[in-house]
Image (cartoon, rainbow, N blue to C red; front, side, top):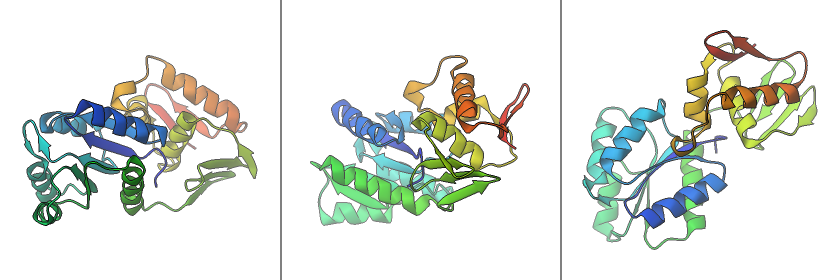
Length: 223
């Protein structure tokens, strides 16, 4: 599973939506939640980049999600989709797969199974090497570990997420807005200066020479 994988959860039942979102966040996913197809479209637009997986209830207040997914598939949307629904007939399952679904889970469901299925879909999407090396910095995505000069560092989830985002874009300048979009979820966006504060803590833990360069007026990059 990609570290800090981002999942879109589209479910009109608020209790289920909140429970699924909480379970995914507890497993270190970044979650964008929506209660309708219109809200899902807004969340996809606001995310600024592709999600690693999407979980859709089928029967939503403004339509059947398979039409939404099918239409986006025709436009090249490649995000893995899990349909989470009470429609449990064989024909409903087949219909889901025929219209862009990658997996199908029937309600009522076991939360641990949902989590395992989402993790599996995210793994399919992730094409990065399990370990990325940049000079004497080693980022192990599979184990969520960071070493500098062979020494294991203790990073918070947010610090790891920022380093991961920079490490997968070596030499590229990443704006603060990009870090907010990919390292915080839409429901828990940071207040002003929090991004700089987390980057400052990350730098202190990484030590000297500082591998994170500040590009004045733009953002940060791994140099």
